[in-house]
Amino acid sequence: MCLLLILLLLGPRAAIVLYWLAWPARWELAFDTFIVPFLGFVIAPWTTLSWVVVAPNGVNDFDYLLIAVAVLLDLASWTSSGGYGYRRRA
Image (tube, rainbow, N blue to C red; front, side, top):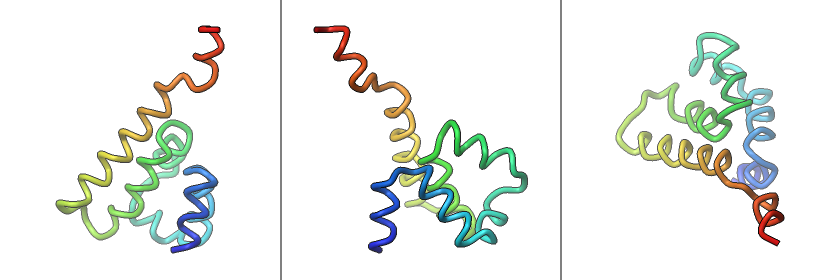
């Protein structure tokens, strides 16, 4: 549990790399090719990470909620302007 919190603080991309190194068989169960997780690493890391967690056991009721939250986190990271947007106001 502590490792999971540390990975989340480092960011989803660090978590993806470490999770892939620790459990490559889980990634093989979740994805058929290399291109899909690579694109997920670049474009939607939270969604990729949540899909690897839920996909090998099958996607059930609560899993849809987890994937939806991950999609919202990815959308928020792409649409937020961060500090750059505040610079234009001043």
